Structures are given as structure tokens and as C-alpha cells.
Image: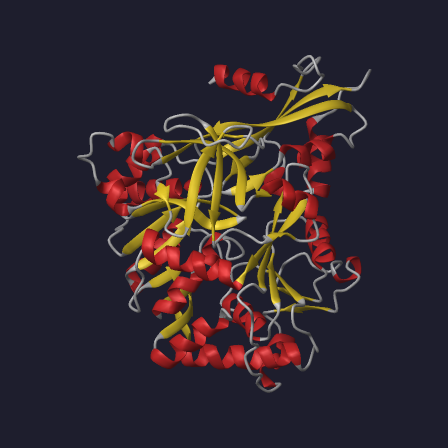
Length: 508
């Protein structure tokens, strides 16, 4: 099974259906999109000489070219490495080197000038907005590669608790199973729909494109290439039946824009939210302002978008006696997976008891790229150990309680404290540091750094910020720096982060 077959199947059934639009401009129908994929696949194999299984990276802002590159990669029998466009060039360079990517696609304005020199295997960097890119569609067509379902399709890099990115290996079978879950547990797209990409296509938004390709729906990239509430409402009025994936912070901005500008939400079909905590009061307000057009999903890169889902039915079932408990949950296990709650020894816990969430199913990754130790720690006896703490109620609804890995989720993006701590420790004025998340109405969580100065030193916040911006993405840097004489520690000398979080909570 090759995922590119999804596109060519639809191109035969709905050849004249609009496939790609940018803002208010219709660009290609499905027949034209399939022809572009054939031509680009031919260049990947012929002009560049890429061989089966080689990795091709995408360090791009949302672009009307994104999907044609993805499907061309798979059509040619290659592996896609989508990279978050907000990452620092040093982080991107690490991913390119670790994955062994041989080709990199970028969009205009991305900081990529030094990337090719930092990766031993990278042959070329191609700007998808350039003449050079357009010439790739004149190199002849290629036949679709015959893939095994277990072949690697999507190599997604997500930071681990050590702060080093890990490559999550997702196969064609993983992504097809995830896509089927969209139809059974999330929404039912049809050919009259449009999916709007306001969240990064390198993540969940892009993964949801496959279900809409199957349905023959339109793929809509805002002219801005990003999340602009006014633009989203304007485009929804033009195209109608618009669906999108959004982080909770995006949902809040949509709600506030609609409330303040009296924007009509009637043309928005579905907003799937996930990637961070949605507070109960926020989803209640969203329902009051925008109506029942929401679905919540809970997943991880290791089982993309598919652990649980809270459907429109359950979100709208206000008459249920446990309605608010359900509304505050992340829903029930999706069709393709099993979910359990276990204790530290892996024993299944009774209903109502908190423990680690583990998942089993066809959506679960095959492992971490080149990292067998991390794979063995995370995949045990066929189960994915998520590191998240949760509880199942008597009806199978899953509620998240905590994140055992100390992960911070800000604006839908994962931030790992140790990654930030290691950078701050490079500062000569820092002796010790501990980074935690503080609840934020706007972002879900924001990064706070507690710093113990080196003897006789008094690090200034400007130099700390400059250091972070030099090494990591802007969204990962602390929003605030706190100076302490010492960090709270247990008898083993380990920093007790719960005390730091408690101090922040008491201030609120």
C-alpha cells in the first residue's frame, strides 16, 4: 500500500473537483494535482537519482506546494521528513543530519542558507517558490513505487525528555489506520468540504489532509500561510463547509474575534482541537460563541492524532448527567486503538484510578529512528507507554491528569524543559536552573525559568534571552526568569519541580 494511491484514486473519481486553493485563488483540480505529483516524482527519481527509502525533508511554511511534494515523495518510494517551520536552524540541521535527508524543500524566507553545509548527505536545497522548483515538472513521469505497508512514510521528529529530538517512524499502514479513524471517530468529510491549513502542515493539520484527499475535498491554504482569525472567517464564507485543526490557543483567538467582530461561524463545519490543554471554561465559551462544531482529539507523535476523541455528539450532549466531566475529558479511545491505565509496574489499574496511559493499535509507530534504547523504553510488549498520567471513568472517557515527562505545551507546540535548561547553563552567570510550565489563558502554558546565579554573578535577562534565541526556537524561550538562592531538592539531590509549580500556582 502506497499512500499516494489515495490521491490517484480520487483523481480518477473526481478529476474536476477543486483540489488546491491559496486564499481566494483556485489553483489545481485533482486531475491536475495528480499530474504534478507524477512529474515531480519523476524528477525525484530521475533528475536527483533518489533511491527507494531515502529521506526527503520539508522545512516549509504552509504552502499550496506542500501536498504535491508529500505525495510525490511517497509516489517515488521515498520517506518524508516534515520539519516544524518554527525551529531554530541549529535544530533543523540536527534533524537533517540525524535523518540522513538527501534533499530539502523550503519556502521563501526560511533561514536555510547554512543548512546544506551542516549536513553530510544533503544534496540540495530547493525553494518551492523558485523557478528551479517549477522546472522539476518537466522531467518526465514515473510509475508509482510498490510499497509494503510497513515501509517508512513519515519521519516525525519530536523532542524526548533528554532534550534531544527523536525520529518517530510512521509507516504507510500507520497513517492509513490513522486516516480511517478520522472517518469513524472525528468527522465525515465529503467532496463539497474544504480543509483549511492554519496550523502547521508538518504536524496534525497536514496529517488530516489524507482523509480529505479520500473524500475529494478542497485543500485551502490561507494567503498569509498562517493563523489569522479574520482571514479564516472570510475564507469560510467564500468556500463554505470549512474544517480545520487548531491548537487550543487558536480556538480562543477564533472565539474572541467572533465575539468582538460579530463574525459569522455558520460556514465553519468542524474545528478539531488538540495538542495542548483546553480548559473547561474555554470550551464552554467556545460553544456559546461559535456553536457545536468542535471535536477534541488526544494523540502523540508516536500514535499520531489517535489515542482518544471527544465527538460533536458528546460535546453537544448537554443533558447527560456527567456532561461537564465528559466535556473536561479527552473523550473515548479511537476505533483503531486500545487504551489502558497502568501502575509503575505495568499492571492495569481499576476504573477511576490514575496511572500512566498506554496504547496499542495499528496507528502506533514502529519505533524511533536509529534509537533502539528509546524504542525499548517506550514500546513494551506491543504497548506504547505515553508518559502521560490519566484516568478512565466507568464509561471509558479518558481524562488527563499530568505529564510525567514534565513536557510543556505552549500554543500547541511541545517544549521540553531540559532542552531549555541545557542552553541556559551555557551562560557563565548561571549555576543551576530549572524550567517549568505556568498555566496561561492565551497559550495553555508558558515557560518559566528558575535560576540560581553563579557565585558573585548576576545574570541579566537580556543576555539570557539572547543566548536562548541563538540556540533554540523563539517560542521555546522563557517568558520570565526568576532568581533564587537555591532550588528545592529532595534527599537524592533532585530538583522538586512540583514545588516550583506550586509556588507559581499560589501566586495565581
